[in-house]
Amino acid sequence: MTEYQDKTIKCVDCGTEFVFTARDQAFYAEKGFTNEPKRCKECREKRKAEKANKESNN
Ligand SMILES: [Zn+2]
Image (cartoon, rainbow, N blue to C red; front, side):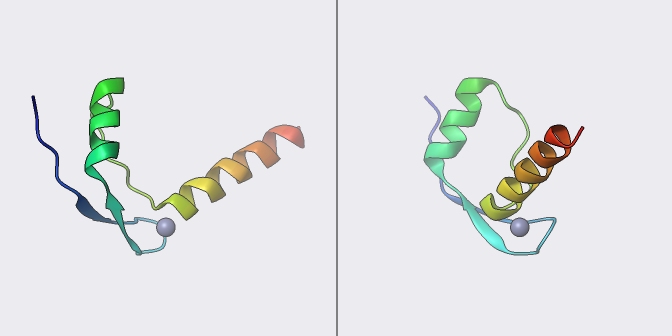
């Protein structure tokens, strides 16, 4: 069993440092995601919202 430790990552969009928690890392590994998140929660939500916007304006 792997032990995870909280990790600080700098958001590529806004430069804010956010925590990739041990719990999230375990979740990612469980889902088979090999990439770490590159964006903070805010930027991810923003991108998600923008994408949803685009799709609804189609
Ligand atoms: Zn950000």
